[in-house]
Image (cartoon, rainbow, N blue to C red):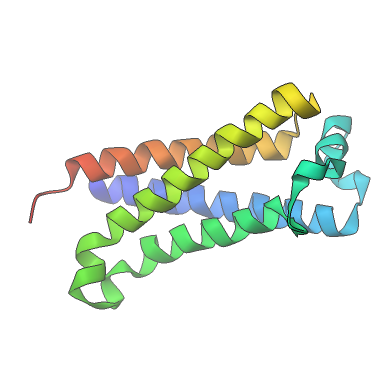
Length: 143
């Protein structure tokens, strides 16, 4: 079961990377054709909440998803400590991503009053990754 959850996590994280890269390109180019017909996408992208100190939120997502993917793929290549504790790292990254996701959903719903479909897809992806990381951590055998 853990191998299945690992593969599902790898697939979801890859999807998250692709969405975040797409949204980063959209933020940098402001090409509204990339919204695929949703005006809410450009509303969210143009809001002041789409950046943190001038860094696109989507780019933060790219790095976060890549960090998770790195731990999922290479946990057994950096010694026994990383191999035994990588699930804690994944949990830490996904709980941080989930908390940030809740904040972004709040902003979209109550402040910006617009929902970007790509952002929502990323938010769903991160939420599922967080749930899977919780399940994997609970099922982890005690050393």
